[in-house]
Length: 383
Image 1 (spheres, rainbow, N blue to C red):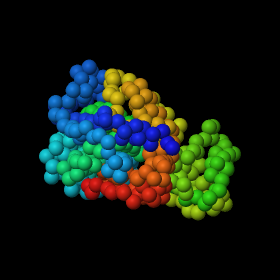
Image 2 (cartoon, rainbow, N blue to C red):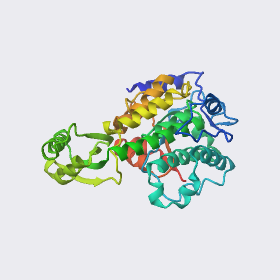
Image 3 (cartoon, one colour):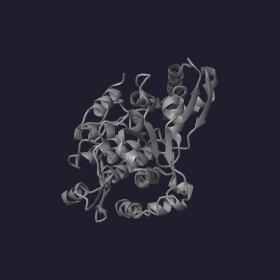
Image 4 (cartoon, rainbow, N blue to C red):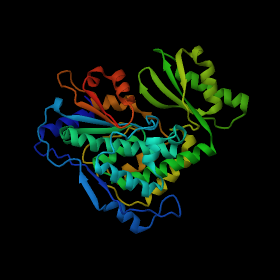
């Protein structure tokens, strides 16, 4: 039995099962234009004490039957599409969210979401904050349509940047703090890509495919043919049992694409990115984000478990949140393992309902490959 499920059981058996994440927006917040983000104490206080506040959870949930509970999974980069948000902006609170984001990001992010072009929206500096905002806006829509799914949420997780969305949902971060972190993260990752270009490729494997040998061969190829020092080639995403994403130097990924069949790979799909995300090639981005969060002061303890795809354990306190949010940039996303941690349970215990708010349904597709039982209760919020 997973430690996450044990935690759920304790919560369900307790009359003090309190789940009250708070989602806040502050329309007056406007950060310094002098650099990526100001460390001015007044700016930080505005992020921590937003004027406009509303709770996603308003009530205590006690002794919930497992099949009445929910798990919310937040998508990451790559799920975006031009036109997302069109179904959401009818709600006044969602318009406020975009107005707040425009002030902090200093760009009309809603227009980029609705009109594109795709080449602009696909850039890291745009698609990361856009996905973050749309995901939380989708929750606002869900709250209007079926508040029970939010009040009965027992855990949440996010794919890569989706973890920041999950932490905002849990009340550990305010909306402004989440935008702050997303913007610094996106700019730092884009800069790291410009400094050290890389590439990524999805590999669909057969049982027993020697991925480690393929990666070792790619690294050796870079050493021998390109005289590269410390070439990078690693598994960046564990998606589901037969699918991984490998990330690294372009030369290494070229080798994998050309020699995959020799190592038992069924097929490959090159990702349209110019960076090696979730590898040591993102080291400069890790350092930038770590230093930025250090100036932000204390966060709050999540009101519900937010399971990290770095180590499959819930986020805890301020130092734990800051450390794992930064280090995930250079560590693989262990999504398959995170799903096992969330959904592992005795055969007689029903699965919770699973909600994917935000663009795309990629997390649902992965859940289906990991647990058909859990997927049977999956739904997405249209955006």
